[in-house]
Image 1: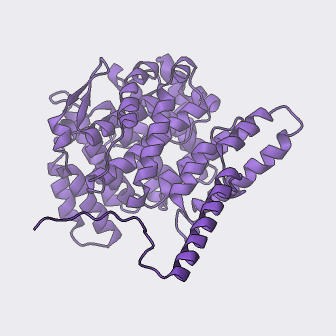
Image 2: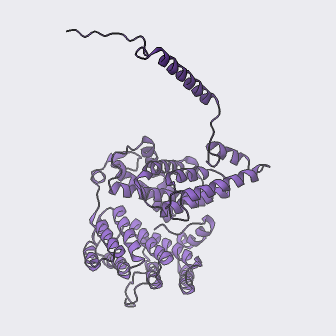
Image 3: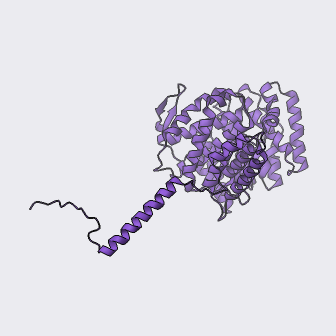
Amino acid sequence: MPILKIPVKHYLGILSQSQQKDLKKRFRKRAEETDIARTSSVRRNPFETTQGFIEKYNQAQGSNEQEKYENLADVFLIRCKRRAGFITVGEGRHVDLPGAWTQLLLLSLCNGKVRNDSLDVLVVSLDHAPIHAGQIPVLFHLAESIQYFLCSDTTLSDPPSSYKTKMLQLGYLVSLRLFIFQLTGNLNGHQLSSIYLHSLKGLLKCETRYQEFPNMLFSVHFMMRVGEVLCGLKLTGDTSVQVSVEAQEHGVNQVLRQCLFSYHCVQNNGTQLSQVIKQLMLLRDKLQQDNWVDCGLGLMILGEAAKSSMLCLQTLMNLHMVQTRESTQKASWPWQLEHIYCSILIDICLNSCCAEIKKTALIGQSNSSPCSCSGGLLTLLKQSHEDKWRLRYSVVQGLAHISRRITLSESLRNTAWITLQKHQNQETDPRIINAVRIIEVLQLPAATK
């Protein structure tokens, strides 16, 4: 039989007359409240940083209201530090990492001291806070903002500054977290925006700009390589992109897996650490062949284990010493992986709780013969090949940081300082001679681990 479409003219016809009047009265009241909300000014949390505040803050510079806005910015920064769990290493019921990171990035648009202070807090928080999948949306927001800033014509034309250096370090830390989420499968279902891809291609312009600054260039390369993995693309020199089969099939490689096993054994007092280490040493050739980002993350994890395990530290050094001895017959590590290795040793010297491990990371293994390379930070200065200048550059800056860390033992600081002065008197490459001065001018933080 045919279906008759009966038009409904009275939507409230199924209700009684009294109920209709009551509902109509509620609808009118809701409509009036909506109109009032649209026309009235929006009340905001007085402790939230807004774009309007940033503009007023920057406009107040040099005026009678400057002190007022600086005090208010300090209040905002204190609140952001609390929300980021700055003292509690990102833990606590009061912590809201996505909100804190967004606010800190916005606060970094202020001119003056608050800019550097907010970036310092953001760097430390991204470096130390626990990793949680709920951070993914804000991480992409940070990545897009950072890459857009780095690729702007103004940024590329201006000389390097502490602000740019910290933005590059932020880009590295954000990309590192996204890379970990990619490996663990947490990025499945997250759609990459066109803004991210566009800003990623723009990083190609940064390569030539930072050729003489290895720490900055490393951050650029790391962001580019991780971006290629996330997008399944390969960036080319003409700013175009190509589909990358390697990136699309990206997974956890063997070196990274064994380093994870090593870390797990150290954290849980596992009895199989020696066996895991043996398997890791059998994979040493893959450090020259595989993706340096995968291998670098593996070395970072092994370095974390080495802060409390001398066996892991010796393994880390042996992996590097083997490729140093065999580099005449085989290809050596990519310079980016060398930079990561150097940064790991610096981090161990600065942050290990064991004095003997700190000393070994700086000087090398005590059982090494005088003629052989012992794997310590100081021995890296002996890499005199032209293509190793970036490694020496990183070591020099690392020794400068170690010699100035007042929380370290006097003997460790003196060893670093004396070695640094002796090397600088013998160094002939002007790029390396200027490395220490660049730390002072740009106020560079310690090498990224």
